[in-house]
Length: 278
Image (cartoon, rainbow, N blue to C red):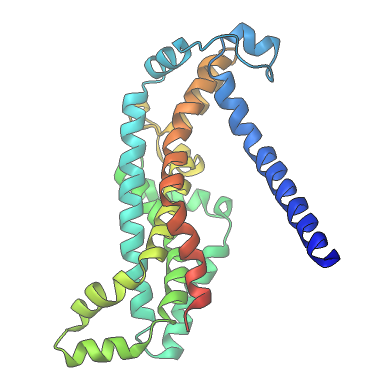
């Protein structure tokens, strides 16, 4: 009886601590959303107080001044094509690495690992020079290609880990049924990695949508700016208009929150799938 009571107390303690930690982590998001409905004077008077009324003119003015229709279009195009290109290239590379001679594949895999651990700031100048030489600066296509180049190393590492857990008997059975290598790869193996693919797609989406460094290096033209660069330029130009900046931040983070909520189930299953496969 005492043991049962002790377990219940421990469970309640853990639940309360988890709830408090959740509130603590969500507090910055709550403050941003709350202050997006305040006039500038009310924000400057008290950042943590609740809004006296829902002042939605912030959003109307922010969307107009910051050209959000163009910025959103640019960001969505770069994000969607980066996710697609990176997932496809990562899967093809990983599938190839798991089907060639081990000594050779280990050396190539090591290159992907090294590419993952090199800090971005050490290659910033090289990226800028390479983009200028290949005429990929001031280009959304260039942004997609360079983003994919940086993310592919992580994608390959993740796919290789899960592909090693897929039984080779599946491919042998498919071959006996008349499937060629390409059909086996696309129709048999790739569907098995659905959770992994969704997990990677969400991560690539978040990284691309929130990225500031690469767009700030490659994109100089105003009409090609992404959300993060546009918000920084607006903040630098009008340092006092916090109401518009916060409204812009709220609008920019809504797609990220929406995508994460929709794909949350797949992310969890994708991260744990490798642990339960034999």
